[in-house]
Amino acid sequence: MRPFSYTRAETLGDAMAALAANPTARVLAGGTNLIDLMKYDVERPAAIVDINRLPLKEIEELPDGGLRIGALVSNAALAYHPAVTERYPLLASAILAGASPQLRNAATTGGNLLQRTRCYYFYDPSTPCNKREPGSGCGAIGGVNRIHAILGASEHCIATHPSDMCVALAALAAIVEVEGPDGRRDIPFADFHRLPGDHPERDNTMRQGEIITAVRLECNHFARHHSYLKLRDRLSYAFALVSVAAALDVKDGMIVDIRVALGGVAHKPWRDSLAEAEFAGQPATEETFAALADRLLAGAEGQGDNDFKIPMARKAIVRALKQAAAGTPQVQSDKRIR
Picture 1 (cartoon, one colour):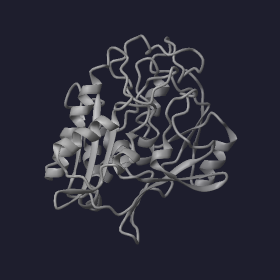
Picture 2 (cartoon, helix red, strand yellow):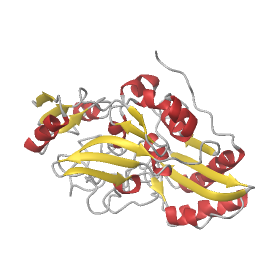
Picture 3 (tube, rainbow, N blue to C red):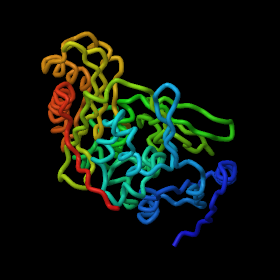
Picture 4 (cartoon, rainbow, N blue to C red):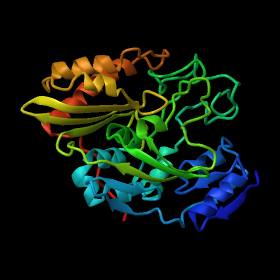
């Protein structure tokens, strides 16, 4: 047993003070990832700060037609919220593709963003892992790496980000609101998660003592033409080998705006907005989508066991974009635990 202190915060100020008092403290919301990591002896926090009593469970309409989603909104509540299903169906679809109904009932919006990256070696303290113990080495490089990254990896880490919801949020260019000792910050979603580089132990760009309070979505034109395609080893309760969040704004068969984010291929949801911009004004055809796929996967590199992900990702991008263009999104399960 590893002892730790437990604080139930009543206000945001209480939570930030508790985090500031102990650099090893961790925030507890749904606990669907943190508790597992503590059981595996991967996370060893000296203090737990429970934020479930904070007023962060609302989904608010914004004046510009967007939404502000509180950090404690459950994944299930978010996926089935009328404003999300009507205006951001890509997000609802991605959430329903992830985990099980029971986990979606417990998991929170903020917690989903803070999931630790996916890697066999990270979850096994008996093996080397630079993410868990910086400087110990990466067991996945040259090891069992079928599920690992093909984009944005480094010599120190080839782990992948596990979230489905975050892939959709990347495509929708969400904004993450955080509060900390220095006040509030708005972080563009593309800047929230990190590639491993020389510091794979750092998953995101949050500062010590900061707490996610909300995720903000701007008004968009992707409600009709979208698709979330997730390729995995089994249909239920499995992480993506490759996933694609595709969103299109199409007029008279021509691309006005196009968004593509990939999951299961990198340390963070993978999106290249510069590549997307090159295809605005082009016809929404399979040839265009294939060219974009090639552009997005330029520089992709397998590690042996996961070489198959490169052609798989290319086909998945084209398929998801064809579904989005036709207005026939990939169907996700809508079964709920009530």
